[in-house]
Amino acid sequence: MKKLQTGVAFIYTDRLILIPFTTEILTSIENDEGALLKANKLVYSKGWPDEDALETFPKIKRNLALVTLPTGFESWLIVKEDGLAIIGDAGFKGRPDHDGRIDLGYAIAAGERKNGYALEAAEGLMNWAFQQQGVRAVTASCLKSNAGSAKLLQKLAFKELSSDTEMIYWLKKSF
Image (tube, rainbow, N blue to C red; front, side, top):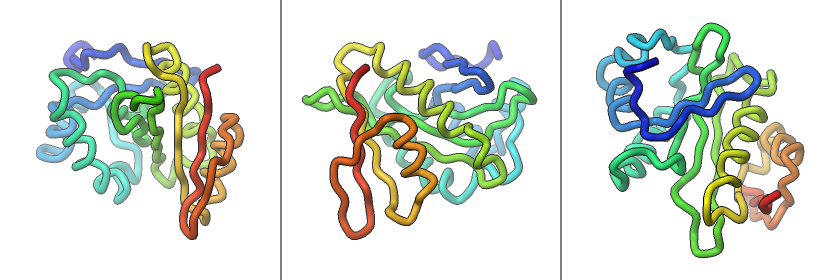
């Protein structure tokens, strides 16, 4: 994958490769159906990019516009190492705030869910994040109706901070 110049090293987990989005990668996906990714032997899994990913792309683009090269505190592609299929995206919504908190988000294509990929990707990202200067905690939120996401955050040792009529808000402090 020599052509994917991201500025941040890839994260390798047991079954996944996490690749930082760049403006070039995102533009390739949006404008020419991922020619840059295909040139690097990456393929789209069935159902990706899905509606959630397409909705997230403008936010990713805004975050990338704030940096020269990705810092790692933006979004990452989730790629299955076996077959190099892109199955989702995950990442953070920017650099740590004044309390050292970063906010985690993740999404896996419907056909790839319930295989532990979101858990594995989130663990990989949090392990990376807690090695970065200034990161003291990770926050996350999920819909109350999303029992799978709540269960995943509990497995990752997040503690429920609060909730409202729609959302549950979570926190995990540094190891």
